[in-house]
Image 1 (cartoon, helix red, strand yellow):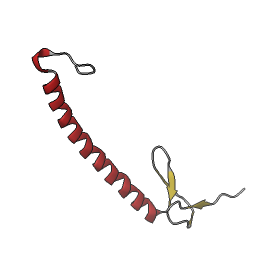
Image 2 (cartoon, rainbow, N blue to C red; image 1 turned 90 degrees about the vertical axis):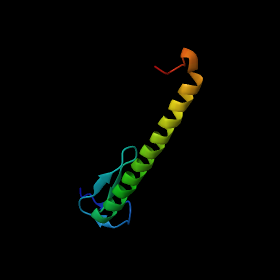
Image 3 (cartoon, helix red, strand yellow; image 1 turned 90 degrees about the horizontal axis):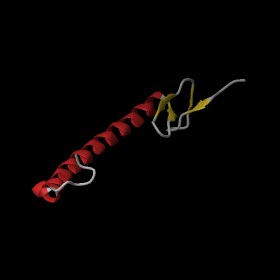
Length: 76
């Protein structure tokens, strides 16, 4: 039985697709794999930026609500 693969980006037939993705992996040709990888890299950069902003705001909340040695839930 023969198997054929279609690129999930451009729909062309590919011999050896490149799998990209964590939760819902897709199979791409080399050209589309570069585009998919660029998306994941950009998404991760945004995730890190949001995480940094959140961490800073959380520290301010902890300082405000945890004043005078008030023990906050889920804060060590």
